[in-house]
Length: 261
Image (cartoon, rainbow, N blue to C red):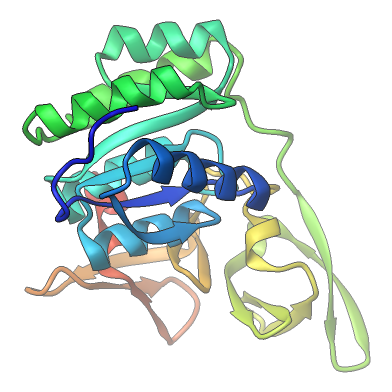
């Protein structure tokens, strides 16, 4: 077991499966008793917001989560909290392991091996924080996609939604954005609004990630519906839409996802 590090070390853990997340937390506590876990996140959006809020020393990120992947979160973390060190968590996949080793970033395999975890803890305690290069993240993503291990499922093309007494058939391409509203999700198009019962988190698994981006815990936007991105001095931003009068707020940590736009 690794010796306890400084009490000031903080971390978040992001894993979409609750039992695996709890198991990771338990193993981390055994391997690193002085570590303080400030947030346990079930998806990438929660992880980005937690990193922006807590600026932890370490983020343990499942590489594959609904919507925003661990790589997406790492890219945003580089802007929101440059000193946060990233440890990727992945199921055993030799291609993925080769990609991580090629990129010289730290990773852990599921299920977590106590000896490997202890080595990672010792490395985190001993080495100073270094910013994860955005080009490295992009290269890792390209290698994983190129190996056929990270390809998304066929994206959703249409949905049925309720508007009053009507049930509407809506092409996903016509959706400007989705907004969470309690147990429903509001589907917003140029013509109006409708409701579906599928939550935001499940939508992220079936939407085309190159077209639909999460900009807030409760909002997913169609990039083709965006007319402009407005940034203020605090790092927050808003999106002006092509065929809607309202603007959409973008949480500060999510602005990193738009830095190339």
